[in-house]
Image (cartoon, rainbow, N blue to C red; front, side):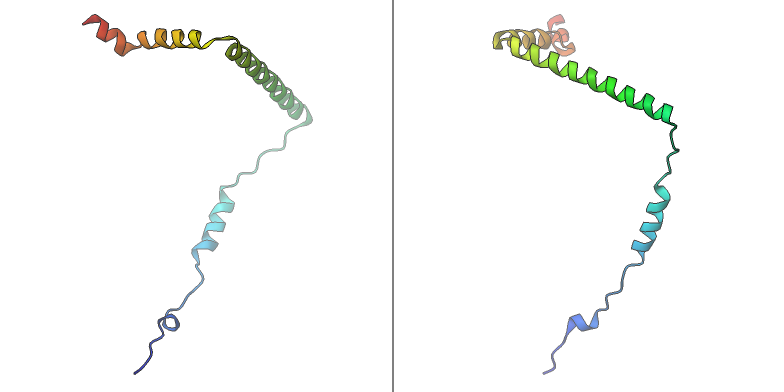
Length: 93
């Protein structure tokens, strides 16, 4: 009886596509232009203003969520559900 070694018959070659992938990946990265100090400062100010606005919005959301009762939320949901287009169409019939 002759033993057969299947793993020795198969040859594993390194994939050439990985080198191509790296080349294409390098081409996809675009170099951004360097911003002047004035532009950088303007962008920083915009970002800080937006962060402050988001923080105010979060605080307002927390305040309104904490002050409303379960009954208020249920009434609002019922009111909004009844005003949906499907509900209004059903009322016309």
